[in-house]
Image (cartoon, rainbow, N blue to C red; front, side, top):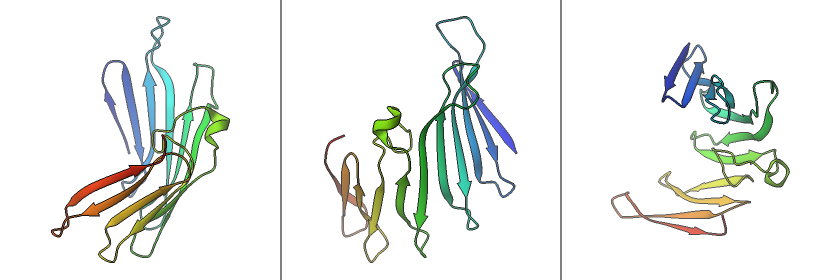
Length: 151
């Protein structure tokens, strides 16, 4: 199944697996330096496990119309626990190697996600960039998010 959206400058194409989960998202854009048609600028590919959860995200940047391979910006693997909670994101591409920002984890590196007994996210520990601690009100609403570390 395919779908698309267009904002004039940026056109996004979406492709889905048979079960309706997102397979890939391609971004096409107009190059203002030259009068040229839209070309592929960014590609995101999503792997989905048997439970329908995204377990892989690959992000590539394309520099020009002859660039068929693109530059690998991010190659993330996502791990879940038996409650279907995201436990860890592992990044295979080092930020210092690619000099690009991934939209899914702009600081690169990996992240661990910690939950309380009620199943609420209470902490995100990142190997690169800021980490967060989430505090809740007695009614379960988020009271505060504390961020520490450098961007």
